Length: 409
Image 1 (tube, rainbow, N blue to C red):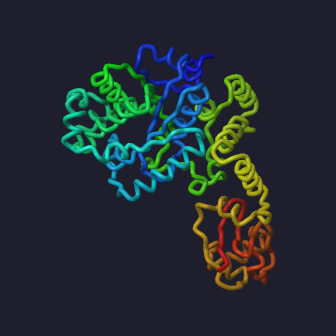
Image 2: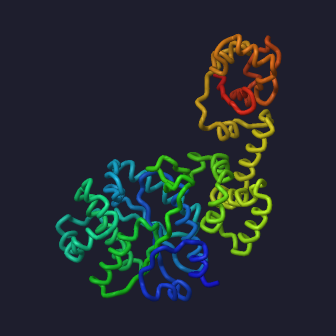
Image 3: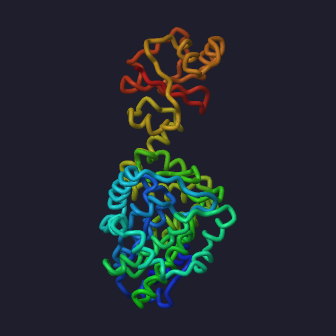
């Protein structure tokens, strides 16, 4: 299987620019780039398919460059529905630093560039004369993202974004020898603008391809603006949270995700899916998906910790948790404070675990309350700092699945 055939088999090719791009990908050593605007200090799972694809191309001998849009991030790529919120330059600079570090950790040997470095000295008049004169407005209006915004309205700043990104390709062609841009399919109009600029200004042919956007089970993009971001930064989305999301991937999507997000071979994926189809209740494919992604992002230790947390929660064995594991497992819960030693009944009411002392006594007597995995049936039990995990956290479970977390102050 050639590189291009593999990309197609994995469902990673949607649009192509350049008649001989397949031959170039299979036989040449191209310098290619993909880009992201620094709207946050971490990438999310929606970006991960691009990162993995970049690693695939790099493994095949192509040279990767990541462009972090310190300049374009100040404008914002047009969204289908409304204008993006303007981000302060100080925030953009901080995000550029964070993304550059993160991508180098994930992809490895990758060159990172910032388009602010070549745009900051470009005057408005020079840009209009040197770049704007080469792109026809009718050409820009014909781009899908622009057409979709014409009814609701689009600002000149957003409208100009296409020219800025097109110029990025021209600059990188001139300065770095870049001849290929790869991106998600929503960037097709920007890619072809860059290709057109290079053809008109340099008389050269360059290439581009886009990947289909990866959607979640509801049909939405993975992304910050969609409100469903799963961050690649472990401090923002823990390996346990990522594991829980991936292990619950629907059967209809898991094979696609294995192809897109992992480096497993076609033979390995076929074998996994065969076993999964025979015993779907074991979630073999989902477990392998989680293992591959989390290990690639955060390492084997983080993956093993996610497994350990999951198994401990399932069995109710929480007393073996460390403070860090409590924080990971219950990240979404607002903790309640414990300011002094308290009788168990009083604590359950004050923490909102139970609505009244009568209800608290009933739950305790019925054996429905556990503290850090230990069942409590003594109505006179006193909660002290020594009961807490690392003298800090108290995990209360009511019934089988309702959890509450307290912090002893």
